[in-house]
Length: 138
Image 1: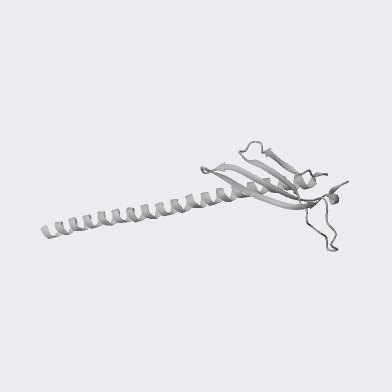
Image 2: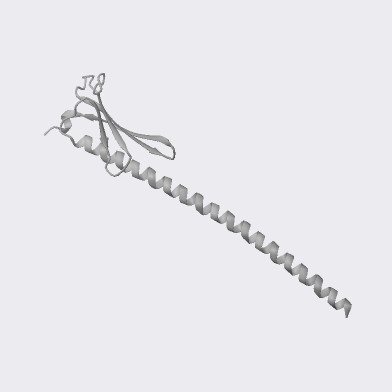
């Protein structure tokens, strides 16, 4: 009888060790999954933020292109309900010629700079294009 009792005791201890190891492996796997989900959500948030900034820049550039006349200078446009500020820079392009060698007058370089504070630092994105003013006059 004593032999059987000692075998049972050994088996019980071995089963407890197996259960503890299984729980430890499960905890490590859960920690890895949690970290992966956290990184995926951070990447999705960054992509959403980049898309939002790209849309704002595209909209501001389209708005500047739709104006009947452009004037040289710098202006600031705050975006409502956000911490984003746009700087609109319009500069004339002086030394540009068409394919016949004739100078193009009223050619402008339009540059939109978005600035905002995020993740403890100032962020900045830029969109730019050219515009030939006589093409947009009524």
